[in-house]
Length: 210
Ligand code: ATP
Ligand code: MG
Image 1 (tube, helix red, strand yellow):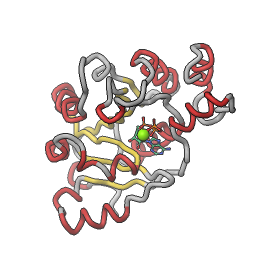
Image 2: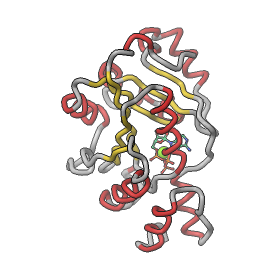
Image 3: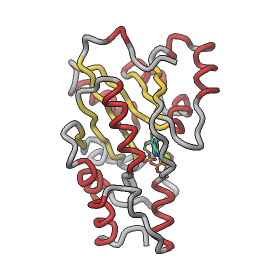
Image 4: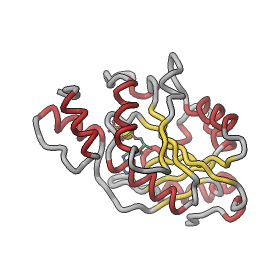
């Protein structure tokens, strides 16, 4: 499995990390930081979703609060940024539209979309997956409980030209999820050290997930 892409070493590279971030936690931050370092990304832009197409069944925290939590979580990393591009669009937001807009805004960059192994494995279920893969490279960070090896082997055999654009990245494993954090808060359990302290305090102050 290759971890870098020799072909494009002379382009400036920009990382994009999409997510609901309800709330953002150290799993997201480690994946983004390791991808930034391993793939020489100039920076990583976190893009909190508006109304995510696959999460309409659950009542998610307001876009504004999720955006603020991402801002708090990244404020000490000069290589990280957060974008309002999805939360300001109305209606359902699709990754393909976001990537098109990012490509226009950052046309001198090569885009790298960072996901965890779970999202990585499911990429072909995304709307207009083929178009997405023409516009961006993909980085799938390891995530406990989600093995991407079978997926990658299959991809290599069946779609070798796409395999070139999909990179698997082994990161220090963190079995943290937003779902688990929300359920802990609901049950009154501790979430300390699962996410940055300013985010934990924000959740407490705004009484989220009770
Ligand atoms: P939820 O439980 O609500 O689905 P989540 O923890 O999976 O939340 P998302 O906002 O859904 O977080 O994820 C955004 C992106 O971050 C996805 O690509 C996901 O695979 C990745 N990701 C989330 N948690 C981890 C983790 N612990 N390690 C690696 N990648 C992660
Ligand atoms: Mg998720």
